[in-house]
Amino acid sequence: MNVALETHALRKSYGAHEVVCGVDLKVAPGECFGLLGPNGAGKTTTLKLCLGLIDADSGSVRLLGHEVPARAREARAQVGVVPQFDNLDPDFTVAENLVVYGRYFGLRDRDIEAGIPQLLEFAGLAGRAAAKIQTLSGGMKRRLTLARALVNRPALLFMDEPTTGLDPQARHLIWERLRRLTQEGRTLLLTTHFMEEAERLCTRLAIMDRGRIIAQGSPRALISAHIESQVVEVHGPGFERWMERARDLAPRVERAGETVFCYAEGVEPVLAELRRQHELVYLHRPANLEDVFLKLTGRDLRD
Amino acid sequence: MGFGAPDRMTTSRLYVPPTLSLRFVPVWRRHFLVWRKLALPSLLGNLADPLIMLFGLGYGLGAVLGDMGGTSYFAFLAAGFVASSTMYAATFETLFSAFSRMHVQKTWEAIVNAPMTLDDVLAGEWAWAATKALAAGLSMLVVIAAFGFTTLPLALAAVPVVVLVGLAFGALGLAINALASGFDYFSYYLTLVLTPMMMLCGVFFPVEQLPGAIQAVSRVLPLYHGVEIVRPLLAGSFPPDLLAHLAALAAYAAAGFYLAVVLTRRRLLT
Figure 1 (cartoon, one colour):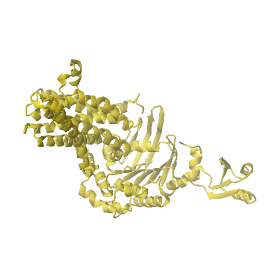
Figure 2 (cartoon, rainbow over the protein chains, first blue to last red; figure 1 turned 180 degrees about the vertical axis):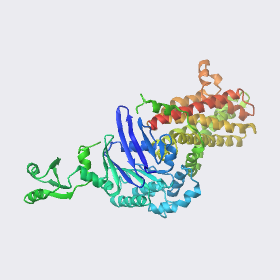
Figure 3 (cartoon, chains in turn cyan, blue; figure 1 turned 90 degrees about the horizontal axis):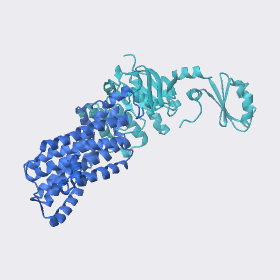
Figure 4 (spheres, chains in turn red, cyan; figure 1 turned 180 degrees about the horizontal axis):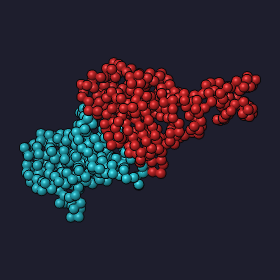
């Protein structure tokens, strides 16, 4: 099997509102694939369509060699899912959550129980088997949800915003674990709106907006294809006047609120000019995925 | 997909009969494990309310009323309460508890991410509601038997009937659950459907006391059929029209479950 997940011309509407408008995706085995997009872009709906949890209006999905939704059950048997919001069983202990979930895969209790120490070690919850869910922190719950998704030793993991709402320490720990999973040869498909997360983890990614894939490729390829390599951010008193001058120094100059963004391959002329302006505050940095994302999806709020 | 105009593919998947298999068992076991942690308060809750009513009304009102067609009013009421407490146990499980699992805790969502379908989840809920109904009906039967108001062994035949009543009301409850916008929604069903049913179906007094037109309504309600089977069984006689009553309950269970499946698919899959 040289394709872990493939969708073709996937469409889904809710009433008159088309949420997914013709999505083509191809994820290779062992890849960490990121689906990026602002809120409401259709990321979660796309994941649900891939898992056969909702019906597409048209288009096709092939997941680990199985047609979805016709053979979604067989496909899901080899897949793990980390949902956007934790849905652990609050009445159970940590270990009970894993056992009860494993049963949904038709696994025998003793086989599940044999794997629990390893899962808890992976989740950084060793020794917490008997802990109640209410006593766990947000990061611990997230890690337990990740461990629960591994109870059936899946070949592919779907993760819907795996680190949303976590503090930096908890987020870095999740990233570490996800790297371990890719090293073990598993395929990862995650949605996120943290560009830093996508840039660090994903071998390839697709940017989705208003139900469409608007760009696809490795983080580096996307940056070099869509944006100048250097950025200078400028703000402070008189930035509006300075912005007019900057237009002659950089090929692309944008304003967002009180900040000016100058994009260029070589920003030396911009920096030289800025050194003479003592009022202005500036930051020079390499362009990143967030710049690509904002260029492609715009700076307007999506609520 | 709006409710008004589902396309062809979705429509066909929406109305196909549910595929029933033993895959619901892990769902049932999950609910059982939760229940085991708070079984005692749960059983007491099932028993306390009908028993207080039964002893209060049975002895108090029974003393005023005297015998009812050869049996004491206590025995008459006890048989009615076996059926009605079964009805309430299945109903509460499928309204409040199932809604909490579906909507609040998102337990259903977690389950269908595994190789389980919504049909499996609903079958598990249904079987679990019947189990809770059995626990409630059985504990009523035990208490009544302990006070000598049952005739063994025929009263034992009431046990499977209690399960059937549980399946009928569990299925109806799941259909209501699929329509609910919040917990408040259930008070419509409880006060506008179940409370009148309790009055119309011969729990407190014989249906024959009602005007003819209303009796006709009583005879199509599921609780009526439950009461009509359980009461003779507890008194030690074979219920008249047993097959018709069983068929009516089975029809409510089957049609109710199909309705619940279609409404829940419409709510969650489209």
